[in-house]
Image 1 (cartoon, each protein chain N blue to C red):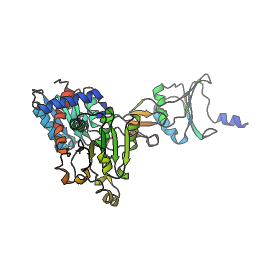
Image 2: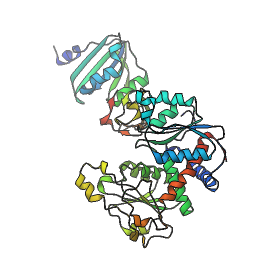
Image 3: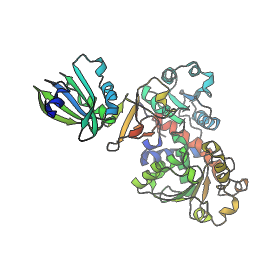
Image 4: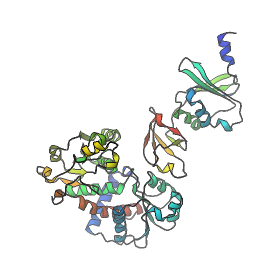
Length: 304
Length: 154
């Protein structure tokens, strides 16, 4: 990569992660800092993602920078057949930083290879979404007071869910223990389990979402079971309601347990959980703002 | 004529050049295109489906007055990892070479992921060889693995 870009969580060392999270904590204490004064950031959303875009644009605004960009490729010249390369090089003439979301996998890495302007990957298809992982790590550290030696239970679609795969990589520096709870069709892939083995990370697989596992967890990371992943609709109907978290399942859980979810949720967390103080998914999204402020400063080489 | 004699006569002898032996017959023509033989002016003999004690049947390519660079020759390793290159000077085999996969493979293999940027943008592909023995590659862009049996050349 030509510049200091954030494309994938596996490029971050333990020190990088700690530094970004420490800076995010400073932004949480004071989100409004004029560190981007006079700078222009481009948010290029070749695929719509309102939540991520608003979070990044709020981060830029709170840092005192200005935003240009688009929120849907249909309104840009990529719909006329312009290559990604041309779009990136053209925007590089205008902006000090490019934040991009693309439906094609590897788009952010390619962009980072062709321009000197730092690239922040805000999601490339099913591949990487490093700011989500960093905000998950921030949320875990904030609620647990540490990152080391935690027990994290992941529930739902562990096969296709990029957030859980990236979280394993991000947590791998901090001696975690994982529980993977998923139907057979959506089990954690071999590749991720091999990664755990290579890094000496303990993990246990379950197909039943049982309270015993919840009760020994520090973090419960829920994900959505997506209908479009199934070829057999009967199978989907059978498993879709199996992995629903209900409030009474938390009765004997640890006091420090917190429930995370990358959002949007559908029905995998019952609404009676929302009022439980252990529900953390809305605050988790808020942490995204501070984490993204820290990421923007990181790639631009701005020290706090 | 003896059996041995008949065998020898099937292929023209090479004074100087490279003889590539033990090519799997089904990959012979892929090997020729990987090495760019179609645009070469050298004298080339291509033979296929010869009897082989080692592999049942095999293909052979002889190219006169041509000695390949290592990185060109290693491209063959993708589809024919067991080929042997005989370097010939003055009708004598002076060196026998085997091929090994390089660490990186650029602009040669197609990514199997239709949603990969490399299949949607005019750009060269780039793979890291993550397991040389199994022949497993990983796309540098979309990060998907490609197993040896699924490799498609561009």
